[in-house]
Image (cartoon, rainbow, N blue to C red; front, side):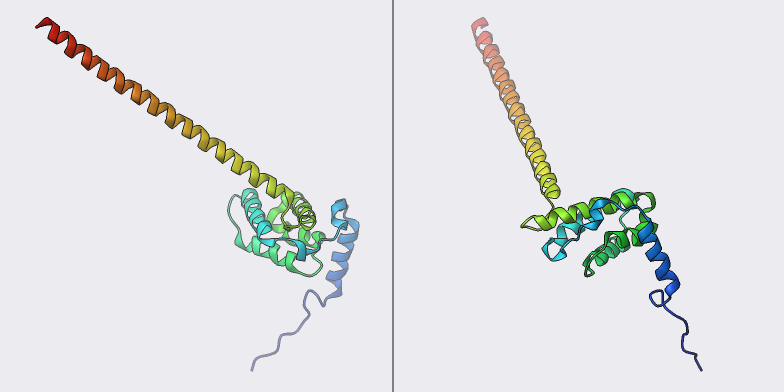
Length: 172
């Protein structure tokens, strides 16, 4: 005969709630954390890409569990940066505060943009596309230059052959 599980969950145990509340009130949080984000105005796909890129950069490997955790915390009604920072602290350790602050600033920017995409991400993407365009133009110029050199080389070779033919006839 099995016994039903006994005890309380984390949410039901007042000892833990008090500790979390005490920590939340005692810690010196960034000013941006007081500003609320309306997640309905944010394009979460652009943020997901940024989160994945940043966490991979910080950890050295892609951590799908961490990325999913962060997204699920953002999808909660009234997402709270303080709670996000507490929840992911074990993953990112010393980089947690910097990461969450950047994330929250991006979210604040995204809700102001009609597309729901942070202006910083738009600028980064634009700069990346301009850089790629310059690289392509440079490659195109290099190809043009190489083809000119090849044509000159052919024409010199042809001139040399004509010269040799002409001079060989005149000797005979």
